[in-house]
Length: 405
Image (cartoon, rainbow, N blue to C red; front, side, top):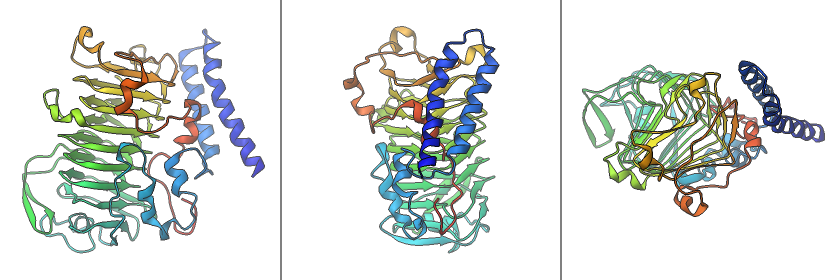
């Protein structure tokens, strides 16, 4: 244990040295700088891979230390942080096991399918009997008080329409691969045991939150969907998006329906401990109106911008690591959308303790005092020097029964 502790200290100390080394070498080739940082990140993550808990990540430290996690699955609901921390999902209900990955019937789903579980009125904690790929024929419209828990199996929702959380509350989605999501619609779809109705064309999001509240999306791997990976609109609030690994996508996250939809002024979203990786372009996230806490994430790729917004959102960026690409015009983290500077200069956007690498920079605006960010503060930020350990497990985990996850 002493040797492991010393190794961890050495790794974290090495990461702390990276910014100073880069800053002291102005003549270094830009690509060399990027390669060195990526190499250090990857080496540190490989070496930290044996650590499933005790990393300082408060969510993982809450449950991943338990070798009997599969016998205490619903305890996960007590580990949430941020604005979505009160999302209980199906904690107080029965365990429902998905045994049938095919035969998706959007109107009359069969027992044993994922769709049958998510539409029920009672609280359910939904798990999977084995590894499976679920290709849905239409949107998976969830009912309230549900958890989709992929731990213990390799579960993909892919190749069709994906998850819709519409006008419901208390939903947890954990440990699922969500990718290659398509549009659906112009079809009947059931949303509860007592109701089905006509759905118009869907956007093709990985997860669409529409008027939803108390939502927690944790440890999912998301990529390559038609529209957004995770979108939250139309008065949605009390949301935490944490520990996810997002790659290969253009418009990653839209938080807020439109500049004119003032109902989103009460939106509060926490984005924490995520790894935003290769092939991402923009909207990581793109915010409107509400209050957004972007804390302790690792941004290793963006092509246009990382954090953007319009309609006077409050953005509190704390303890993140931003590694800009070598492309000259992709250094800025932020994008104040649409409005002239005379307007956006009054929006409250701050960068507090963020680590900027390879020329990355954050254009601040509005007030800097902490009191102006009270509604956009949801947990205590940790030092950006600890990012490698905090996000080392981002994405869907390879959990097997009888061992640490």
